[in-house]
Image 1: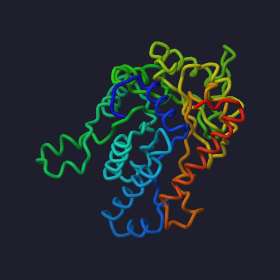
Image 2 (image 1 turned 45 degrees about the vertical axis):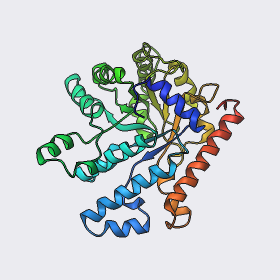
Image 3 (image 1 turned 90 degrees about the vertical axis):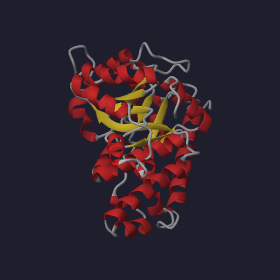
Length: 327
């Protein structure tokens, strides 16, 4: 989404427009490619990257009218080298062109000077498709592809090095209407090894981070009541979601772990405000690999679309049952 309005308001508007709280994660691997694309990927490097691009852009296009946002995970693109990063950029640009909120799942977090450099690269990326560079001079081409990332409406950030690993992003992104989802209580099983440790205050480490997140976003709350600084809280911790919502009342929540990781629609209900807003729920594998259980790959885009429709229905039913569906 191109304008610089407040991120929380922009996310809220997208949720209301699509009547959906689902996010599709774009986390491609070769094993996910349907047969026709898998065959092309075996035809050398050009075929591999063409197949990767067609798959990712095909998924984004298939679900674009059904969900408010997509979340490309940069690690899965970095695994394919510079060509993979060019596909990442194309995914972000195509999603933005289709009016989707783009959440860059980059999980950056480092000391202040390094964080500032990450923020510059991730938030100030030129909005140029690589396909538009064919007529550029070699020097201009190098200038433009030096930064391959973006555009992003929001980024995921890792706060476990402290506030100076987060603040450069907020300082750079806030004037441009960018948002941030800070890792608070993640969906992976071993998160408890660090995040559940008790502190002298009586809170856990994750609850302490939740307090920091609430503070970081307290001075940037939009008309929707949502801050530009949100939190990642996993669907695999349903009994804790209400507590984190209490600690971060204005933070938009990004809730991963639904579907393949075991999180349920009923379990994520406490993440939401009473009107059914305030959070989005991510699914990746269950959408990207839907073709494996739906037609065997001949209609992989249709399968992804049907899976997204089913996810929307599942979440809507759970929220309605709890009296929280107001969209």
